Image (cartoon, rainbow, N blue to C red; front, side, top):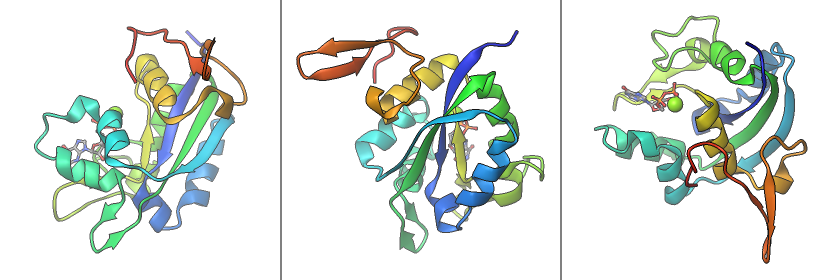
Length: 175
Ligand code: IDP
Ligand code: MG
C-alpha cells in the first residue's frame, strides 16, 4: 500500500566532517522524494537524549549521545544537517538507501555500507539517520522542526497564544 509520508533524515557529524553531504543528498535524490525542510543544527544534550530516548538503557548510550553531539574521536564537530523528505512511502525508500544499522553488515551500495565505520569504542558511526516508521517519523520531525520550517504540512498545527505548535497524531507522542 502506498501512502504519502514524511521522514526525518539527519546527516550525522561524521557525515559532515567527511564532506559527504553532496554524496548523501545525491544518493537520496534517487528516491524522487521532495525535500520540505532543511537546516543545520547544533545538537545539545537535551536534544540528543530525546532523539535517542528508545536507547536509554543500552550500554553504548553515553557514547551514542557524544556521537550525535559531535564529540568525535579527537575533534569536536557539533553539527548535524536535518532534512525532511516527503512523498510516497518516503520512510522505507530512505531507509533502504541508508542501509543496515551496522555499517559492516550494510550492503556496500547503501549510504551506510559505503561510508560508515565502527569506532574503536564500538559505536556505529553510520553517517545518516532515517526514521524507521510513521510514529517515529512524526515524533522526530516535531522534535527537530518547528511547523513554519516545513514548507508543506503533513501534520496538523494549532494556534496558541505564543505562536503555532504541532498537533499530535500518533500515541499522543511527547516531544
Ligand atoms: P537505526 O539508526 O538504524 O534506526 P537504532 O537502533 O535506532 O538504529 O540506533 C540508533 C543509532 O545508534 C544507530 O544508527 C547507531 O549509530 C547506534 N547503534 C545502534 N545499535 C548499536 C550497537 O549495537 N552498537 C553501537 N552503536 C549502535
Ligand atoms: Mg532508529
